[in-house]
Amino acid sequence: MKLIVIGPRGKMGKLITQVAAEREDMELVAGVAPRGRDYIGTDLGQVAMVGRNLNVPVVDDLESVIDSCDVIIDFSTKEMAMEVVDCAVRHKKALVCGTTGFSEEEKKKFQDAAAHIPMLYAANTSKLVNIMNKLLEIVTSSVGDEADIEILEMHDQWKKDAPSGTSKEMGEIMAQAMGKKLDDIAVYGRHGSSPREKGTIGYHSLRAGNIPSSHTVYFGFMGERLEITHHSYNWECFARGACDCAAYLAGKEPGFYTIKDVLNL
Ligand SMILES: NC(=O)C1=CN([C@@H]2O[C@H](COP(=O)(O)OP(=O)(O)OC[C@H]3O[C@@H](n4cnc5c(N)ncnc54)[C@H](O)[C@@H]3O)[C@@H](O)[C@H]2O)C=CC1
Ligand SMILES: O=C(O)C1=N[C@H](C(=O)O)C[C@H](O)C1
Figure 1 (cartoon, rainbow, N blue to C red):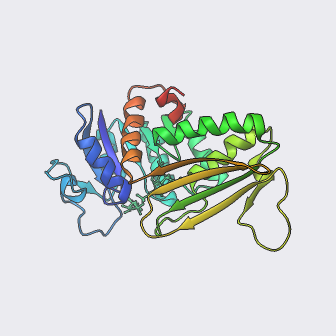
Figure 2 (spheres, rainbow, N blue to C red; figure 1 turned 90 degrees about the vertical axis):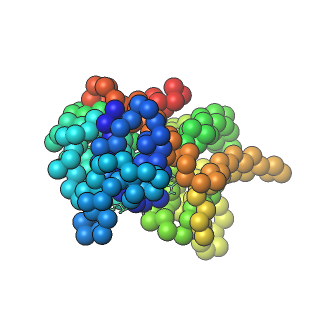
């Protein structure tokens, strides 16, 4: 499977390149970085600190290399992700996008792309986070209307979007389990002096140091509470999951796929 990685110098792009480079079922054919970077034209293995040359370049123009790949993995920015999905559709290439922070309108672009290409969007590619999502569905189905549900997510100081893509997905899963729409019940931060409104899902985002990713959902009762938490110690679990998603897409028909398909959940 021939792979292009977008943003191979980024936190995720670098790890994805390193993981792909050690997989026997994957061949890296290029990395794509922003125009003007001093490492454009140099070896992808050096740029992504793989520890050896991969004998393929980092370029600044996806269009010039896209025909050499089967699948693109994109963990970059929401602006670049929009360019990547357009290019993937033009060239009929499979795409895994793990970038977060999109508006509903932007997300629809991925659904539309799925009519033309195998398209997998995953706000979180960790196996355990996706198992946590199943637990959230079970708990919310039975006590969602009784519990005060609050989500606390923690990430590094550099993260561009808040709340995290994962916490938005968790909220959507829980709202759906209660037969509601997240937009109608989400409360972002909690300010002022009014009491908590029953039936809402509270969102809290903390940014500090180099925390990779933590998500806790609290189900508050009177006299007791349930907490379901996932912590990642680094970003490797996401990179391994991203490569599993790409491997899953190889040879698939056009359509919209999720990590639940990959993990059989
Ligand atoms: N789905 C998941 O499991 C995960 C998703 N993410 C998401 O992935 C995204 C990236 O996160 P990080 O790697 O931490 O960010 P980062 O800032 O370290 O890396 C972003 C990369 O995108 C590149 N980029 C930006 N514009 C570009 C352009 N026009 N052309 C080519 N490359 C371009 C940058 O040069 C950089 O290398 C974020 O949206 C984050 O939330 C992060 C971790 C896990
Ligand atoms: O930016 C990150 O680091 C992460 N982003 C994703 C998100 O927004 O949920 C996934 C994970 O939490 C790491």
